[in-house]
Image 1 (tube, rainbow, N blue to C red):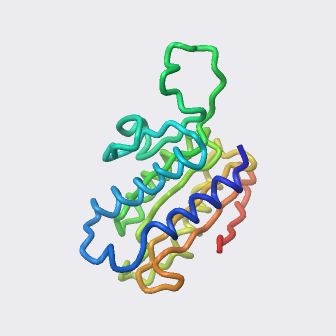
Image 2 (cartoon, one colour):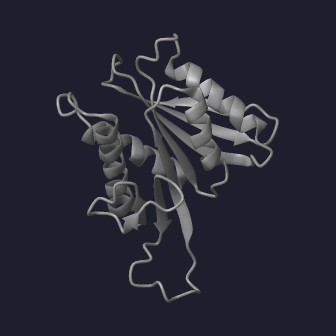
Image 3 (cartoon, rainbow, N blue to C red):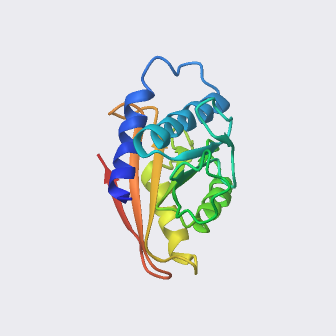
Length: 191
């Protein structure tokens, strides 16, 4: 499966389905549930994946499995007894609304072990109060990725950063591509 297409479709779905006005009274739990619901629908509709996710929306195959969300391709529904089917993990995601780098570090460590096509980290980059921005946080993620001995060339990460005061409304998307352990990963903002 093409990583660029996975990333493009995730970005499109988040931008189109989480819109101004609907989110004014959302708690962190509401944000998590709704962002993961959008990703769940994208995994199933756009890629034909089985999806296991936190909150277990009615569209999912079941509750979270190792990560806040996991996409398995092809959808194994009805084929659980076929042990000879080829399959892959297209996407895993962690969603952390904390404004604490230590908690973000704990969640991104989980993504390091994943052998998914794309690893997604969804964060709240608004109102940190210490001057941190999306760019600051993403640069820290890049540093952590370069320090992980298991980093492999072309490991792909998508950071979805909620920023309340930015345009286009509220979201920034960053792609990080590993160049392997000890090497500085490439960062590119997805427009």
